[in-house]
Length: 161
Length: 260
Ligand SMILES: Cc1cc2nc3c(=O)[nH]c(=O)nc-3n(C[C@H](O)[C@H](O)[C@H](O)COP(=O)(O)OP(=O)(O)OC[C@H]3O[C@@H](n4cnc5c(N)ncnc54)[C@H](O)[C@@H]3O)c2cc1C
Ligand code: FES
Ligand code: FES
Image (cartoon, rainbow over all chains, first blue to last red; front, side, top):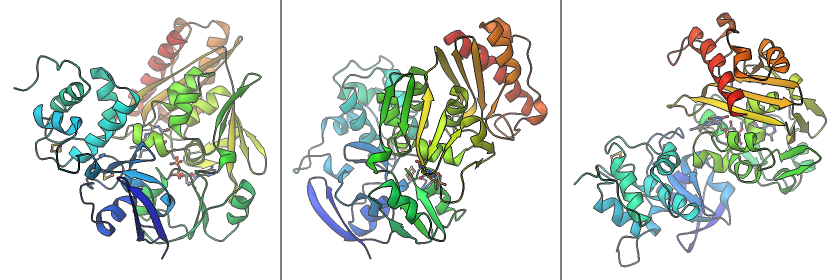
């Protein structure tokens, strides 16, 4: 079986995969990084979003074997080593950006990709960027508010309190 | 999905020879092919990875042509296609950001999904599809639903888009799939106007020639007022009836002209 080595959350990790092994499967089942969620496995929901070489990608729609040498960031690398949340995660917690939490790893990774390109997005830009991330619980307003807050902007007045 | 052999070529020439193997298929960004393989609607024995081939990645503009390498992602075209703003906008509105970071123009055009955006951009611009063997005019390329003029194993290495004087793409989103329910691409080169329609027809992307004639004579939204597309040829599904799609073509064509 081919062996792939990826730099995952700042650490070199190697694993054997089949050619058909998806990145999501390699992360979850080979490397036991189960923070990346599989919602649909059909490229629709975005729960599996990770960063590949700094860009948001649906890990259920790419083969691990294509990524030998790539840099991967997953939800596990977002909090500090002592477990304290990063600014996006904390904002999700503070602004009701999650309920069941299933979509949250993908939402946080998409939000992180957005804020890297556009540090102060407006509400329309946030909603547009999250087009590929589906949440069945929150109705999205809490997520939008969290990303506004994480980017240091005022949260719209209708925020859930 | 079934397993397969993977070839990672280092040049287009290597890729072309790998494509001669029995059961070989090109792998672009995989955004269409992987879901298809999961459903076992495709089961290639060999995948030939094109997506990082330097010869096939990049956007450049010279002498009125925007050249897009066949393995260039939608995100890169959106970012670097400023010389042809309507095309950059089309690329930047395909699917969602994660799909745009992987999906490539070659994969989109080779797949010729009846609801895809690039076929409308290519046909509307009168683009030339460049392969490892020849050049094909967009007018001859999109032959039917999911069918193209590509031969077995042929690789799209680039697409050359003539840059029009004015152009605009109007996409009426199908929010669940994020494809176009109907999309209309209008391009004006001097007095000559091309109108390409995606998402609507049972035969895939097509040129609306009646509207092209009207707009070539008078490039204004009112010139297409009252023109109708035959609903008999239109797709009808749970997202929209044939009559609804036919109606949208008129509406979107007027909006595209107004936005030019
Ligand atoms: C959620 C979602 C939303 C989407 N929304 C849209 C949308 O709004 N508009 C739109 O247009 N598309 C949309 N797409 C499709 C997307 O644009 C795909 O990226 C594209 O259709 C296929 O490109 P790919 O590079 O991923 O090709 P692949 O999936 O790798 O390949 C597709 C087909 O093309 C062949 N192929 C690939 N590259 C080449 C080449 N260079 N030469 C010859 N053959 C080749 C493959 O063998 C395969 O048959 C969406 C996809 C998803 C998952
Ligand atoms: S699991 Fe990958 S998009 Fe839903
Ligand atoms: S919090 Fe439950 S799906 Fe988003």
